[in-house]
Image 1 (cartoon, rainbow, N blue to C red):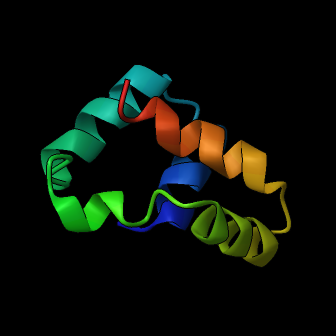
Image 2 (image 1 turned 60 degrees about the vertical axis):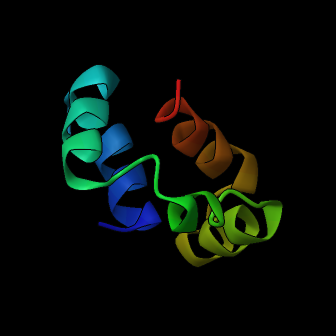
Length: 67
């Protein structure tokens, strides 16, 4: 699962974010330190540019997974 997948699911699946969060947590180990290295403005900027959306939107969705 990638940043792009999570973003697309959160905006376009019609599922509640809590459902997406639960499934994402079942797939990814959110305590894995490697996963936290993706929490940088540079990564959000690159993902936003690749998807044609604002990096802050990507950041908001991804940070919502950790709450």
